[in-house]
Amino acid sequence: MNPLRLQRVPTDLATLLDDVLALLEPNVAQKRMSVVRRGWDVGARIGLDAHLMEQALHGLLLNAVDASPAGGELSVALSALPFGMRLTIGNAGAGIGFVPRPGGLSPGPTTKRMGTGLGIPFAMKVCELHGGRIEFSRPAVGGTVVIVDLPQEVEPIGTVAAHA
Image (cartoon, rainbow, N blue to C red; front, side, top):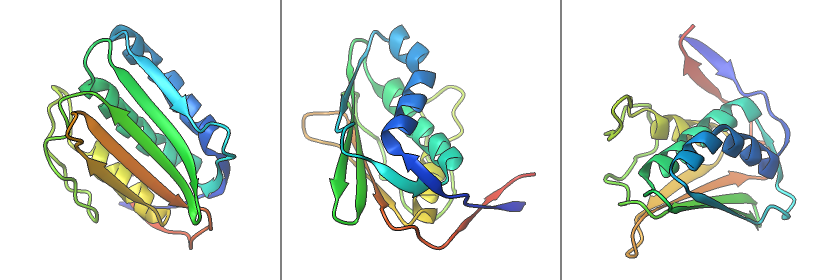
């Protein structure tokens, strides 16, 4: 295992999300879904390891698309907080079937035929390394809401283990 050091650079979170959503466009189109973006004008510039965060957000957004019904809506919202930025992802699927726990890289349950169960733990670890957090909820109206809070201040550089 090689530890990877975070390579923080000023990153526009809205642009990063646009890039991830562009990668997911075939999945979204196949399900005839709509993507609703909110808060793209909040000036979401933050110090991130853009490559790791892109992978983490890709996993979270892909889960949201996969869990959504055909013709459903994926909502992606940015908002400024006193300490940083908040990203909120919502879908109208059946709702997450377990409560993800922060702290490790242990696989969670997966409903995907080719899933590994590592997407959510990886995203949680990446956010943790950035000094942030992820919270999952299952609203009474259905679906899943994922809240990603990221601090504006650049934290000390962390590491994440990766296979070489």
